[in-house]
Image (cartoon, rainbow, N blue to C red):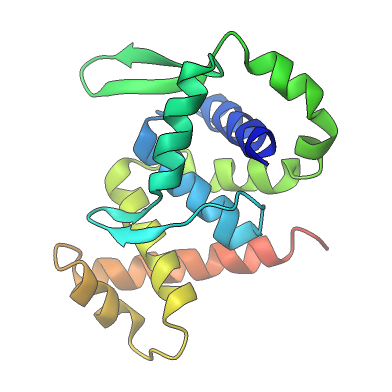
Length: 177
């Protein structure tokens, strides 16, 4: 399972990079959350609501493992910090699981297209909105709840994020059509 997860993450990194994403760990965390939750791609990662939105310690550890296996590398980008890029061993893994990854390319490209242009502040809002939508389905005032969970996100900004994510989910639901 780990090899399949890593192949999917490498494809996501590549798709995000092609669309101009910074591809820092925060970008990968939030895009992976969308990939798993909004499009049902089987990354099998556990996410919790953390300081800056949904976060997976499993993913954090996996990225470290991928770096140790030379599947990803770190490219320093001043002044903000590093980006994650495919490493020297990435192509071997990608080639070995190309059919598996190809089965999920539509979802990977969709998530990369929707999220790559956003900075980390927007990604936190969008991923938190997705978390609220998916985990508090009975809640009437999702923007109010999101503001209560993340007081630094105003209720207006929370409502905007929830609206945007609902549109993304509607589009994601049509991917298989």
